Amino acid sequence: MSTDKNDRIRKVQELETKTKNLSIRIIRLVQALPFSEEARIIGRQVLRSATSTGANYRAVSRNKSAADKLNKLKIVLEEADETAYWLEIISEAELLDKERVQPLWEEYMEVVRMISRAIQNLKN
Image (cartoon, rainbow, N blue to C red):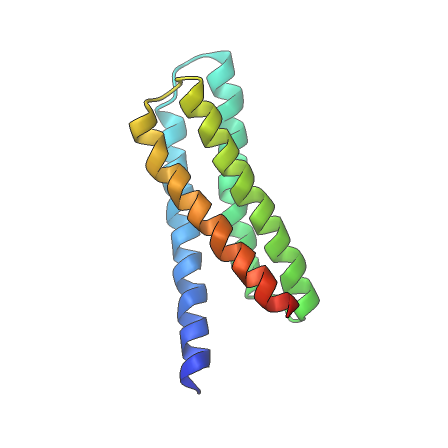
Protein backbone atom coordinates (compact mmCIF):
# COMPACT_ATOMS: atom_id res chain seq x y z
CA MET A 1 0.00 0.00 0.00
CA SER A 2 1.36 3.41 -0.90
CA THR A 3 2.20 6.08 1.66
CA ASP A 4 -0.36 8.47 0.11
CA LYS A 5 -3.11 5.89 0.50
CA ASN A 6 -2.06 5.20 4.09
CA ASP A 7 -2.13 8.93 4.81
CA ARG A 8 -5.63 9.24 3.32
CA ILE A 9 -6.89 6.29 5.37
CA ARG A 10 -5.34 7.76 8.53
CA LYS A 11 -6.93 11.16 7.88
CA VAL A 12 -10.35 9.58 7.29
CA GLN A 13 -10.05 7.60 10.52
CA GLU A 14 -8.93 10.68 12.44
CA LEU A 15 -11.87 12.73 11.18
CA GLU A 16 -14.24 9.86 11.91
CA THR A 17 -12.98 9.78 15.50
CA LYS A 18 -13.08 13.58 15.76
CA THR A 19 -16.71 13.84 14.61
CA LYS A 20 -17.73 11.04 16.97
CA ASN A 21 -15.97 12.73 19.92
CA LEU A 22 -17.54 16.06 19.00
CA SER A 23 -20.97 14.39 19.08
CA ILE A 24 -20.27 13.18 22.60
CA ARG A 25 -19.17 16.65 23.66
CA ILE A 26 -22.38 18.09 22.19
CA ILE A 27 -24.42 15.58 24.20
CA ARG A 28 -22.72 16.86 27.36
CA LEU A 29 -23.28 20.46 26.29
CA VAL A 30 -27.00 19.80 25.73
CA GLN A 31 -27.22 18.19 29.17
CA ALA A 32 -25.87 21.45 30.64
CA LEU A 33 -28.48 23.65 28.99
CA PRO A 34 -31.02 25.32 31.28
CA PHE A 35 -34.47 23.80 31.72
CA SER A 36 -36.47 26.07 29.43
CA GLU A 37 -38.58 25.49 26.36
CA GLU A 38 -36.16 27.48 24.19
CA ALA A 39 -33.13 25.59 25.42
CA ARG A 40 -34.91 22.26 24.94
CA ILE A 41 -35.79 23.07 21.32
CA ILE A 42 -32.36 24.42 20.43
CA GLY A 43 -30.70 21.56 22.29
CA ARG A 44 -32.57 19.03 20.18
CA GLN A 45 -31.56 20.86 17.00
CA VAL A 46 -27.85 20.99 17.84
CA LEU A 47 -27.89 17.40 19.07
CA ARG A 48 -29.50 16.20 15.83
CA SER A 49 -27.13 18.09 13.53
CA ALA A 50 -24.00 17.19 15.52
CA THR A 51 -24.73 13.48 15.66
CA SER A 52 -25.75 13.53 12.01
CA THR A 53 -22.37 15.04 11.12
CA GLY A 54 -20.54 12.09 12.64
CA ALA A 55 -22.90 9.42 11.37
CA ASN A 56 -22.87 10.73 7.81
CA TYR A 57 -19.10 11.13 7.77
CA ARG A 58 -18.76 7.54 8.90
CA ALA A 59 -20.97 6.52 5.99
CA VAL A 60 -18.67 8.32 3.51
CA SER A 61 -16.02 5.62 3.78
CA ARG A 62 -18.62 2.93 3.11
CA ASN A 63 -19.79 4.46 -0.19
CA LYS A 64 -18.46 2.90 -3.34
CA SER A 65 -18.64 5.56 -6.03
CA ALA A 66 -17.14 9.04 -6.08
CA ALA A 67 -20.63 10.46 -6.71
CA ASP A 68 -21.96 8.74 -3.57
CA LYS A 69 -19.03 10.04 -1.53
CA LEU A 70 -19.52 13.55 -2.87
CA ASN A 71 -23.23 13.56 -2.03
CA LYS A 72 -22.61 12.25 1.48
CA LEU A 73 -19.82 14.80 2.05
CA LYS A 74 -22.22 17.57 1.06
CA ILE A 75 -24.62 16.34 3.75
CA VAL A 76 -21.79 16.26 6.29
CA LEU A 77 -20.86 19.83 5.35
CA GLU A 78 -24.45 21.04 5.78
CA GLU A 79 -24.83 19.30 9.15
CA ALA A 80 -21.49 20.56 10.50
CA ASP A 81 -22.32 24.11 9.41
CA GLU A 82 -25.77 23.82 10.99
CA THR A 83 -24.18 22.63 14.23
CA ALA A 84 -21.92 25.70 14.22
CA TYR A 85 -25.01 27.87 13.69
CA TRP A 86 -26.84 26.36 16.69
CA LEU A 87 -23.73 26.78 18.83
CA GLU A 88 -23.71 30.47 17.87
CA ILE A 89 -27.36 30.72 18.93
CA ILE A 90 -26.65 29.02 22.27
CA SER A 91 -23.80 31.44 22.90
CA GLU A 92 -25.46 34.64 21.68
CA ALA A 93 -28.74 33.86 23.49
CA GLU A 94 -26.62 33.31 26.60
CA LEU A 95 -28.02 29.86 27.22
CA LEU A 96 -24.46 28.84 28.18
CA ASP A 97 -21.27 30.80 28.70
CA LYS A 98 -19.44 31.71 25.52
CA GLU A 99 -16.26 30.19 26.98
CA ARG A 100 -17.96 26.80 27.09
CA VAL A 101 -19.41 26.99 23.59
CA GLN A 102 -16.58 28.69 21.67
CA PRO A 103 -14.13 25.73 21.58
CA LEU A 104 -16.82 23.47 20.13
CA TRP A 105 -17.80 26.11 17.57
CA GLU A 106 -14.15 26.43 16.51
CA GLU A 107 -13.84 22.68 16.07
CA TYR A 108 -17.01 22.50 13.99
CA MET A 109 -15.71 25.32 11.80
CA GLU A 110 -12.52 23.29 11.36
CA VAL A 111 -14.65 20.31 10.27
CA VAL A 112 -16.50 22.59 7.82
CA ARG A 113 -13.17 23.70 6.30
CA MET A 114 -11.85 20.13 6.10
CA ILE A 115 -15.00 18.79 4.46
CA SER A 116 -15.09 21.74 2.04
CA ARG A 117 -11.54 20.88 0.95
CA ALA A 118 -12.45 17.19 0.60
CA ILE A 119 -15.41 18.12 -1.62
CA GLN A 120 -13.19 20.30 -3.81
CA ASN A 121 -10.60 17.53 -4.08
CA LEU A 122 -13.24 15.01 -5.05
CA LYS A 123 -14.62 17.34 -7.71
CA ASN A 124 -11.16 17.81 -9.29
